[in-house]
Image (cartoon, rainbow, N blue to C red; front, side, top):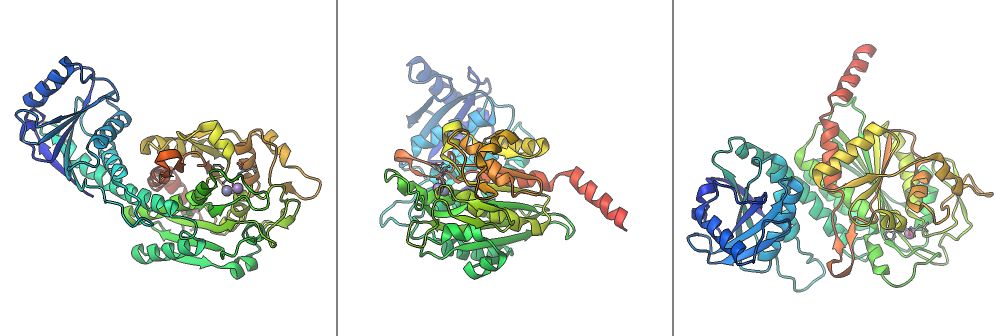
Length: 503
Ligand code: BES
Ligand code: MN
Ligand code: ZN
């Protein structure tokens, strides 16, 4: 999709040419400087009782009087926040979806100027509206909307620059989000571990990442026995994907992202009920999101070093499958009793977390569709976030806020670890039903010997029902987090101080 900016006086929107003019209005009254034709259409609609300046209200007007554009879409955002503006724009875009609108122009009136953040979310909202899953459909019409012009008010001197910055960031994130959605939406027989490995290799060629894809033999050599124990029930070969982006100084410790890449989770011998089991093709949502984030990083080229790790396999029942009660020695040396083969995500992640140690990371963040309990706790609005230190938690929270890809901090009190005790191994892979997302995080924490955070995206990675499909979350959160890490003056200063000391 093509995004442009165009300077236009908000008191002369009538002359804007596009298939649809979208006017997003903040506040509870029409701004004074608003174009007369737009204002009179809005006033008429308000008088007729068809439109109110209240959050969520949208109205399309065909052949609006005095306007060059053949369609006018009014959208009330209520508050003048970016979040409200994005929601209002999404509402307006839903109105023109499937219609003959190839080019839309959007003006945000009554706002306190146009910020880079607003421009970013204009792109994200438009790209979200335009995404169509086509890969396994013989007939799926592409979205018609191909071009969006963001109108900046002539009087708003900062707007042009802010819009350009925001549009570029939004496009990079949207490309990452679309890639994550596309991979996660593809069925388990297509988006296999092998497929993911090949796609990351391809991405490496495009952006200059170093990519290694390890097979079963290689991970056996590394001692990743818990990862292998999950994969062993399936005929589909496992992959362990390692990708590196070097954008920082050689001496700088990297950020490591780890994504759960279960391409289908049947539950294994502790098999899941049949209803809705198809949705377990989305169980590689964590992997999809870290790969999508890698793509965004390739485009944005922030000054930092990044390592992306994806343990990927299927979780299937068979004569070779791991059984409840089996004890396996993880790469860390800790033994694990498998009390429920459906708690497989933590078993592939724990070996990946141990593998991450070799990079002497500044911080490791793992991302996983880990527990149904997290869906119960937080639903589909916020991802569960766990962090071993407050600063890191704060950074992830604000990255989520900036990206409108929200998360919520969950606790890591040691009391939650009690349930993981067993008579037959160093730890069990499940505790009781209570606090299931937290006990899963406590399991992972046993393997994280560095600054670490964990995102449980079981509720946010995909939608069910008629809107069934991957969301591409948390690519936005992760990208903002990485940009924040790259811009962190304190850490850089610390490192150069350490370097100076050594010299
Ligand atoms: N992939 C699932 C988690 C999941 C379930 C995500 C439902 C989204 C919706 C995970 O591997 C799993 O099965 N977890 C179990 C853990 C339990 C056995 C301790 C769960 O949540 O039921
Ligand atoms: Mn499972
Ligand atoms: Zn799973």
